[in-house]
Amino acid sequence: MITGYPEIETATEAVRLGSFDYITKPVRKDALLQVVNAALSHKSLVDEKEKYRMHLEAIFRSAKFGIITVDAQMRLVRFNGAATKICGFVDTTKLEDDFYSDDSQCSKRCLFTLRETIETKKSYDIYRLECKHKLKSGQVVNITTYPMLDEQKGFNGGVMIVQDESSLAELEKQIGKSSKYYKIIGQSERMQQIYSLIETLSNLKTTVLITEENGTGKELIAEAIHFRGQRSNKPLVKVNCSAISEHLLESELFGHVKGAFTDAISDSIGRFQRADCGTIFLDEIGDITTATQLKLMRVLQEMEFEKVGSSTPIKVDVRVIAATNQCLKDKIKRGQFRMDLYYRLRVVEINLPPLRDRKEDIPLLVEHFMAKFNRDFKKEIHSISTDVMKAFMHYSWPGNIREMEHAIEHAFVLCNQRTIL
Image (cartoon, rainbow, N blue to C red; front, side, top):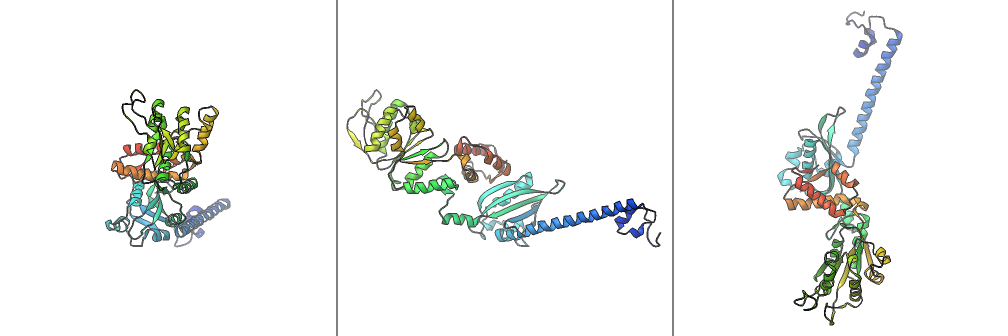
């Protein structure tokens, strides 16, 4: 035993104190070797953890997106250089008291979302948020929040990732790529092509056939063509051909004179005459009878028709836009639709993609409908959870945009908090 040192009986105790000189009892060589190896392994693990920590620190400092962490009481813990640039944080910033003060004019949606993460321990997304902060005028960002958990799954606070999309949004404006055209929402490549085609068609009289599934927004395309063109100050008359009974459709389209049939107690003006100098939109054109198809063909060729019960021709100047969710070529093969009418209607065809084929537009549509129903229901629901967004992105949406709109409306009816879970 060495004088002045406590009695150390095992090699393990020596390792704990950092010296093998303290060992006073004999230790087998193999046991000592095991302890030495354990000590070396422990040092290697410490070194590896330090290397990992330094690696994370490097990522934290060099990341081009803002990283902001808060504790469980929403106190600001750390932020990286990108957060300083994007959000304007400085060392003295207090998250709620300073940066989100009432005079900042900030919408505070990112703050609300981060607080929601702290309360629910779930992650959330906000797509294309305009900051509206007085120091960050015109800035557009994507926001994602996550709960911050330690290695034992203990809750320590929250993390907010902020990605600046301002340059991309500005570039889209410069090259004419828009996320919204008239009332149509979408920035996918297919939708950009459709926007361009609408611009080309808007000031022409060319007949247009809009095709695709129900719920894709065919009526909005017809409205955009009309209201973007020179006829915008003239009538846009809409006819749902499948909603009008067969024996009344001809009268609805072309009008009738008194006594033309039992219920014709006075003269009536038809939809084509009302649309004179404007546009008529014939929705579900595939449902009209072959007799009506023949009369419609004459209108398209000569812009002339007679009222039911009359032989006096009426001249009109009408732009015709038709739409259908049916395959008219199949109906032609079955003898249910005239081939000449099909080609006369289909001078230009706009084929709208179903929602499942343009899923990159789903976040935009979600934001659009959330804003709409916040106004309608007088609510302040500012985001949806990441899990809900993932479900939206993986769902096939057979009812397309109309189904999505109804799904979000249903969620707004039931949701009594700021976030749809």
